Image 1 (cartoon, rainbow, N blue to C red):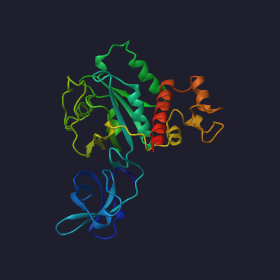
Image 2: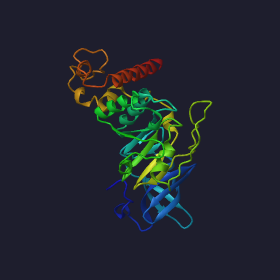
Image 3: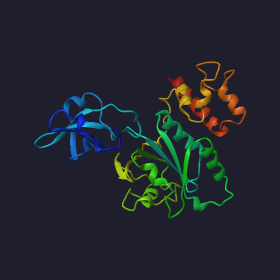
Image 4: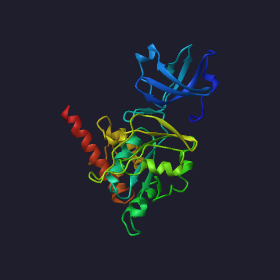
Length: 303
């Protein structure tokens, strides 16, 4: 079943139950989109004792005389902790060329969180009109492209070329610093699409996050979630070995190391570090990986 298509009747077992997707959660009310319409639902008793419904979940909804209730959550193919969302296809990392300043370290921290959950990352660099043709950011963008990542760029008053096709039939999560132009980017892409926007705080050099709750927005034939969760970086739950295996640039070298539990830091006969020495992987991203592994290990030693 296409995850973006509206639920089909094959899940239904009785006439007053159908399948839908949770598109908004506010407090203990769940807005679920079904083939027959959108319903404000409550979680039924057996659900309150088990798995908590998340935005993005496919659920079985039963309709009663005065309300509708979620009876079952169908299996998820992934879920994020912060933001709390399920069944994500891709994550769009928005970074500005300036105001706030471009940071490859921050991009890679987003990347590591995203790929750890086996979600495809897509980079979008905004405010390209604020830099000149000689700016080193162009070389940074090229390095991501050469490493196999999809990168889109935009300037003032324009949406990235071909970017609308990226969203079709996908559940996307939007992440990036405040003030990088996330809302403006999607408002340019679709004038009918309205995420709340706010001017950059000049005093702080960054924007103030305006999102209040988790919600899926329909756009360009897909769904987009904008939540504040990605502004808080937490790597303590990660296993370094798993992280290394899921970073796209590293994958083809991982199984060539001498030791199966090689963490690619200082172990002998490490294929990843050999690739690094031969300029086959990005040295900057490898350094950021080492920083995160050190952070994870330091946190675990505390406990």
